[in-house]
Length: 261
Image (tube, rainbow, N blue to C red):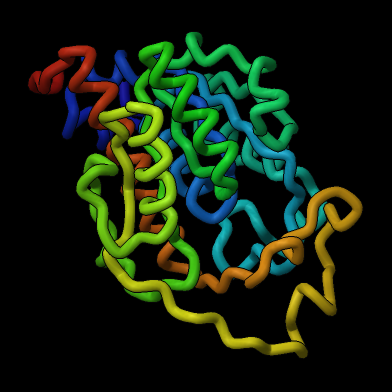
């Protein structure tokens, strides 16, 4: 009988779809990149999704984040994501962690329950903590590197972090992981050199913050406010989601089989 995943099954086969339905994936950060990753996983029939993010939708998110709409401003992103996932697949189990993942609270999430972890965090200390823990526990992980301040959606590559180039965030993470002896991190990164954002005081978050979380964290704590667009973060998220789907199927050994007649 046909369902919303019939066209995917024609491509991957029945066993692969069963594997995806039995898989549990955690996505840390459901913003510009992570939101599109979740979209891929939900539309591919992944059976359980864990979403980790403490942020609420801000008007400045609308230019690039799939959960950001005028109607969702002020709502927690994990809540909006859950509703959208269930509008795609009512059978998908969604677990929400309304928290900003940091080394101090990392123990609250048991990573061993996941078949795959997706790192779409933009804080170096949090990324490193998640990578360390997955490495120690042997949990598959893929990490998103920098997607801000870029215009070329075709410049993304999938590689081991040791082979990355031109990506400032990847350089920082790579050096720190080397010092700790951690090898074998799969990442999605861009070979495009980042652009310098315009210093426009009229729309700067430093002077005109409209963030619903202004009493918690502020993007203005950063030296430069990152610039972005509708297509670069989305491209990164779609690539990451595709890699997770393929890895889950391949690692389970559920090779393609013809659809049943």
